[in-house]
Image (cartoon, helix red, strand yellow):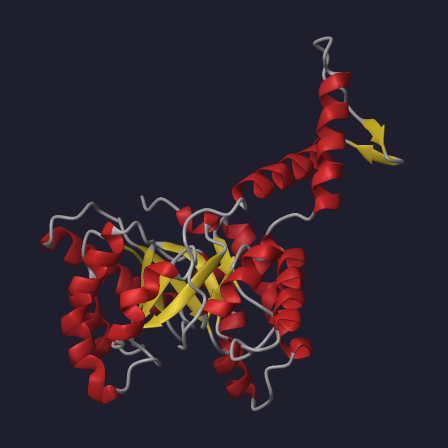
Amino acid sequence: MTVNDLAARRSLLFVPAGDERLLARAQLRGADGLILDLEDAVPASGKEAARRGLPGHVDRLAAAGQYLVVRTGTDREDWEKDLRAALRPGLRAVMLPKAERPEQLAELAAFLGVLERERGLPDESVALIALIESPAALFALTALAGADRVRALAFGSEDFSLALGVAPTPSLLTEPCRWIALAASAAGIASFALPLSLAVLDRPDALAEAALQARGLGVTGALCVHPRQVAAVHAARAPDGAETAWARRVTTAWDAAGAGGQAPGALRVDGQMVDAPVLGRARALLAAAQAAAPTGTTDHEGDI
């Protein structure tokens, strides 16, 4: 079985698979994962060259400790070529764009299995991410989330808005984010979504607000198209000082009440009843705060 470590990823940053300059600096961007993009980011005339260069980039970035995803083309002819180039020991997941039917994912999963056996890789070593980019996909979320190898749902806000023929406003995008979070949680998998256009680069306040809203909806992470977006996304995932202080008061009071060996059924903290679910939320907040501690070197400059 594929280990679902996508749930621990706060951010996945798209990097054009054909751009040597951006690929050379990709490991410095501070994201929790990199999506080597063979779909929209590479013109048709450049796809073969991008595929030829992909094995070397996968090897180098994996050796640098990067969590690597590849976004393939939509059609089978394209994703077969993409996967033959990308599937190496360092690849952790494959993102299928415009996922609408579980049969699409089943075909891709079966092909991955064949390649894994051909190349001596462990069975189901590579996870799938279903990219939700149309209203039709929303009504298949349960089936998509339950498909073989699927370990995350992600939201493509630009294509979703295009399919509706409207602008990607927060009022439009909030409800799909909610659906995706609910379907992913029900399936026990990760979710990557923002109720904001991914094209927004120079409004950090709007991005921070959207990332906080996504967290409040139960979304576990976000897709990013520029390194500038990564820091705001990570900051939103971290509990603030007030949340952390509350969580400490709750866990301290609970531990004190159970110090005699008899765990309390419930107690009062700050005028609020604390029972097992509230305690669980407090402990999760403390774990999130610890995980959010900054590590490594980042470089947020440059263009994508």
